[in-house]
Image (cartoon, rainbow, N blue to C red; front, side, top):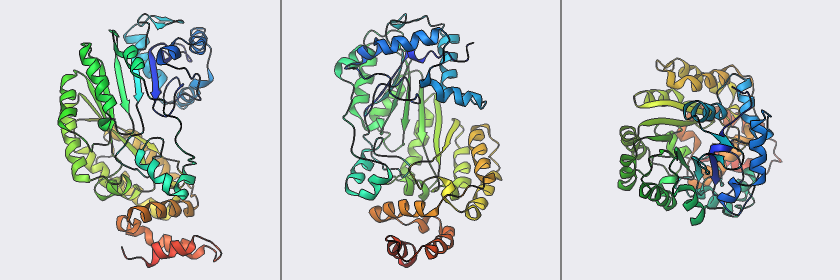
Length: 406
C-alpha cells in the first residue's frame, strides 16, 4: 500500500454550509470553488490531485493525515484506503473519480443552524454563537469573527446530482450545526428513500432533538452511525452546552443507543470539564452500546484549553479520572492517553484568557463558574489579586468572581 495515496478525492465529496472547496473535512486549504457540486467534482484541479495521487506523489492538502501517521496514529486517509481500496475494490480514474462517475461517500455540513451555543465551539458551527458574537464584540474578538461568510448551501441541482441514480452510494455523513433540526437533512433522506438506496447514514448530534420523525428515519436505514456530542455529566454539560437540559440529553442518548447500529461519543477535553472527567467516565461506561469515545483536547478559542488552568488545581481531578475503575475500558483508550498527557504536562497558560472568556459567557447567560467547580475559586482570587490596578477588566473580574453571590 502506498504511503501517500488516498482514495478520498476519487470517492468522497465534502460540503460545508459556510465554506467549500476542500478535499475532506481535515484537508489543508481550499482547492476549488465552483458553481456546482458536479463542476467541482470534474474540475481541472480535482483531476490534477487525482493524477498526482495515482502517480504516488504526496499532496500538501493531505499533510494532516501524513502527520498523524508519522506519530503512529490512524488517519482518515487509512480509513478510505481500508474502505475503498481494500474492501470495495473501487476502480479509480482521473476524470470521474470512479466507475460510478460521482462521489459515493458524502460529508454534508448543511449549515451552522444549531440550538446550542457550546463554549468551545464557534459562530461558523453554531447559529446561537453567531447571534451572540453579533451583540458581544468581546466574544467576536475571541473568535476572530467578522461575520459569516456567504452561505454556500447545496442547491436542489447539487442534491439531485449527488443522490439521484447514485446506485453505489456508500455513506452520507450529516454534521452541523445540529442536523436533526435542519429540514435540508430530511429532504435529502427522503430523496435517498425514493431512490431505494441504503447507504450508511452517519449523524453527529447533540442529543437534544430525538423526535418521532428522526426515529422513523433511523429505523428505515439498515446501517446507521450516531456520534453523540457529549462534553460532561449533569450540570457540567448544561454549563458548557447552553441551554442544554441534561435529563433530556440522557434520555435521548439512551433512545439513540437502542436504535442505531453503531454508537459513538464525541468528547472535547477542555477547561470547563476537567473537574467532571471522573463522573463522565462513570456515566458513559454504563452505556454498553457505545463503541468508542472520540476525544480531542481543545486549543481554540483562547481560554478553553485545559492548560489555562493551574497545574495544582487540575492534577487531583486528572488523577481521580485515571483511578476510575472504568478508565481501562477500550472505549476510553484515546481519552486516557490525553488525560495522561495533561497530567504529565508542565504547561500552564495565562489564566487571564480563561477568566475573560468565562466572564463573557457567564454575564451573558447568567451562569457562574464557581457554581460548577467551587474548588477553582481560590486560584481565581489569587490571580485577580496579581493583576495590576490599571487593568480595565479587573473591576469586572472582582465584581463577578469575588463579590457576586452565586
